[in-house]
Image (cartoon, rainbow, N blue to C red):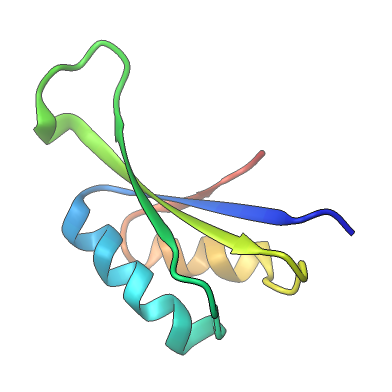
Length: 81
């Protein structure tokens, strides 16, 4: 089985950090999620950046629909590959 990576898109850094912290409690994510700043195309203003929380799921056990619902609680969504 190939490694699965889930990318949650969130509106700001504080929200992304909060979500990353909750992933272990809510989904049992063992590996620390990676936070990545994603500047919107053509935007130089940091206020217009989205933040990505990258979750490695080597066992493929996380449910994408549950992750999407979780992200939606924080005004975000699960990026579909």
